[in-house]
Length: 340
Image (cartoon, rainbow, N blue to C red; front, top):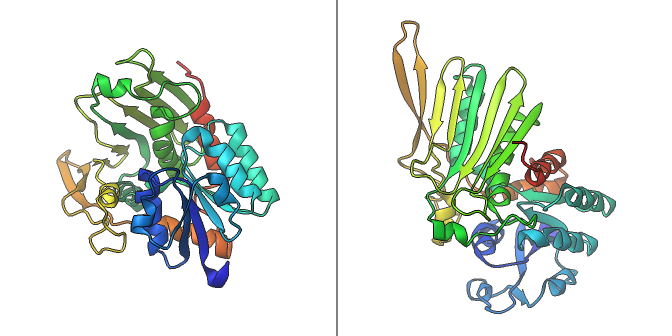
């Protein structure tokens, strides 16, 4: 790596490549956005004139000047593409879900270790403003001993929209593999690996397509955590609800980074990641039983911190926050059959 610069290639330039990766690799002083794969429309060249636009992933893998590859291809190709990148001497930033099977992610970690390469899972929702607000409230101790927590993604999609989604064929792309990694990683990052877990899914609007899933986790000290997503519900629940011995905290999903990036706002802009109106609510009861509410301002954040962590892992061997055992456990949960 020349002068501490990590030269990076991206495998696709759809929403993931154009919004979640390229803007940060371009803006971060420790990276050089060197190449991208575009089979037909060469859109990346319009925004990044200096970039090399390859016609195939194999061409990018053969580029010996590239130090790291962002593997953001379709879910079922993650294993093969990450494996090829490691074998050609690249570090890998791997989009979620890491792989379809837990045996595959284990093989990738072993292969990365054997080749002295770093394999890092892109879990950007750890850096969401709403999630960090929840984390800050928990760490403050204001809620007392936590007893119950709910993490949700709710939508109100039509039957036609749901009908266009992938069927559950163990190749990813469905709601479990699409939204599950976000919620599961947030829970694991806060509470660790649970003592026990249960999984269920449903096909309510279409007999072939999963449109609801829920996991139930039991942790020490009688803590129960629910991870759920519903694609078709008229009354969308708050994204986060936590109940402790001393109070409760409720927070709607409010992070605006994704929308700002889609609209083309630079992550270096002063308004990036700043929420002006969204707040969470702490609810408590005093000694007399009076109901009290306190509004909590949403924390500021940026996905740039993720790329800081990637850079620190590669350049300084600083442990990447998303740990190997956490990723393996996450994939075990995704591939798991229903318990009830």
